[in-house]
Image 1 (cartoon, rainbow, N blue to C red):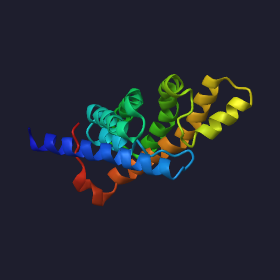
Image 2: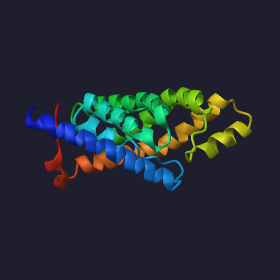
Image 3: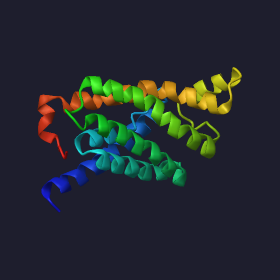
Image 4: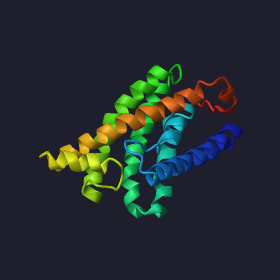
Length: 186
């Protein structure tokens, strides 16, 4: 294996652990509308490309299995892969600017729930124990269908989370001091 490939494997593993640690910390703190569980995936998609971002997302969901979700965490890897595709495509040419980060966050705030809502409904009936559940419950109580409530509730949560996550990664990769850690693959 070449030196750069070894670095990519190590960064992928670290990014997956970062996803799990941040996601579980935010969940334990019950911070509404925030997950921070895709920052590592976003970083790897920016720096290593779509394939490494997707691998990071998949590994993250695999690592989450012992934290209570078991095998039910794996279907959500599809959402992580979609995150890597969107971010990787936007970062492919001329890097990941703040403007691209906001665009990516806006796209992901709809794409992630569009993919995750059916999975969330199928596996959990719409409620996963996250901070978004209260919003979903409120929308459902207001007379909306469960699918509409789940989709709209997760869009709101993802709007805040995905834009913030993308902006954090853009700030890191555009920081002169951070440049020495970059692993540009493409």
